[in-house]
Image 1: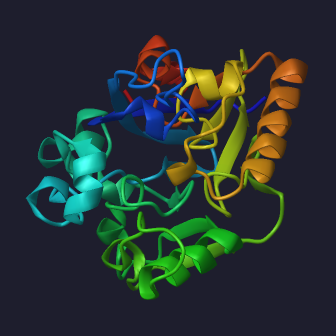
Image 2: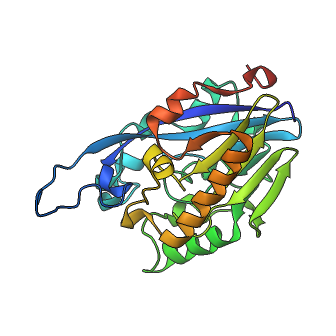
Length: 272
């Protein structure tokens, strides 16, 4: 296995209703017609994969101006990134020992506004930005028409970027670093399998926002699910890989799961 490292970057906290991420969580019944709503704290994170073939950044987080009117008011009210202004991409990279100029390529799990808000740092450069074909199409369709999803902002990604488009279900990015197409949350979600010397890291991304999506197979709430059928198939793909590799599975926004992995994996192989 390749002697790479995966370093996690904490990009702040989003506060939102648990019903958005767990289908039926706050649905009323005859016995409980007015269930209480639970507001949860979710993590926004990125990762730096320090690999012999290059330094790869996974996602770019939210624009620091999210709470200053950059995000549309209805979206920010539903998904409040309370500390976005404290988490500029360059600052969080520096805290982990990297500069934006150290990044050789970026992988976008998808182009929602809490993942694509830092792409401006790579505008006008030749840094490859990997994204799935179906995601790029849907993002532009959503941002440029009144159809699709409201969670895409054209100003995040409609820029002079060096797009490298992934077309297939699996794509080898580097040795022992494979991208996985996991449609469900959006048409083009990418996850990854990274085989390290002592363990396998399986990035589920927003295929699974929180642990209950993965372990209990509770679908995402209707506002976050593009296709429940595709979501379920993608979930089984991840679970089969975990069964075969005993991988550590990293979810999209589960704060406790994120914190359980501390700063990441095999960090002695990467930058200190």
